Image 1 (tube, one colour):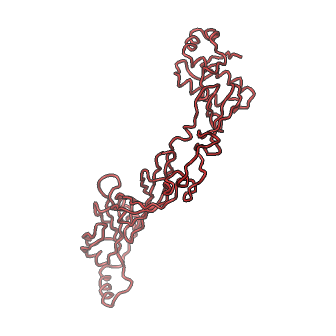
Image 2 (cartoon, rainbow, N blue to C red):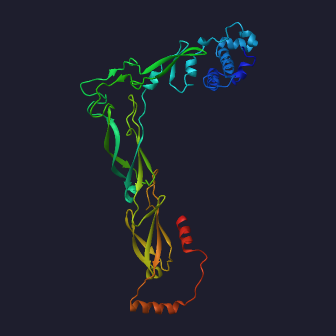
Amino acid sequence: MASERDYYEILGVNKNADADQLKNAFRNLARKYHPDINKEPDAEEKFKEINEAYQVLSDPDKRAAYDRYGKAGVSGMGNGFDYSAVDLSDILGDLFGFGGFSGFGGFGGSRSHQRNSPRRGADLQTTVTLQFEEACFGADKEILFSRDEKCTRCHGTGAEPGTNPQRCSSCNGTGEIKTNRQTMFGSMVQVSACPTCGGKGETIATPCTQCHGRGLERKTVKKVVTVPAGVDTGTRIRLSGEGQPGENNGPNGDLYVDVRVNPHKYFRRHDFDIQLDLNINIAQASLGDDITVPTIDGTEKLKIPAGTQPGKVFTLRGKGVPYLRGNGRGDQKIILNVVVPTSLTAEQRDLLEQLSTTLGTEVTPQDKSFWDRIKEAING
């Protein structure tokens, strides 16, 4: 029964819609109302209405007549269910969850090429462990990981040397099985992977004794990865093409190397800055001193002013970690801690007692905690 609704309204498009917009609208509605998918009582009538609108609007001559005269303009142009005018296999072939359709009403082509088309291999992941200095300056590290590689015995054929894969007798080498199915549109050909050969089109009578017919064997691969300067725990390095082999001559996947950095005995990292806690005695803090401090580049001279308080932070510019992306380096922050002796000689005790008589016994509350002052100094 012909629809009384406007064809553009039925498809949900405006009158300026191009061919692609019409096709996309029809495809979406067909998925929704196809009777094999939608079991509502009126699904079939709605689908016929959608198809009728699409047949008219997808034909330039019928569309022009419809735009000018309405349905009267196409009443004699065969606008019923002339399915041969529309390649529904391209539009409806993905409606069904069991395989595809190689033809619809005698139209459409095989999809076996999709099944046997090149496919990219899977990605792999491994971990590399670095020392603190290696993470700072970069290093070439040897890694070991497992992946599939072409079998060295059968060279990837899966067949025992001296034998060859044979054309599958079930599908005659096409890799697919076709089954006719009657639908409201006529005869539809369902295409599915051949269960005998798994869609490959070949069977192996005598599998390779080394890879058992896979054509691949698991191997441990040794690789040297160049770790750039500035990495840290959590950095991921991608090695293109070092993953699993692709199928049907497809490209290999990638190998992702996750970085883990061992902690340093003295240094702590904060982004690209390095922090170092350094102990000095009360005489050095009170009188000042010239000391030597370690850095990742070696040792550096540092002048301690007289009267330096515990928690004082000194900065060595450009002595931190190189930036991972870009030029320059972070800084090294040196946090001084004044160590109070726990045991004194008689002479040291006598000297300190003499000093204490001149310093007095007055105490003063602090407005900020020791750690608050350190955080302020480190964060600028």
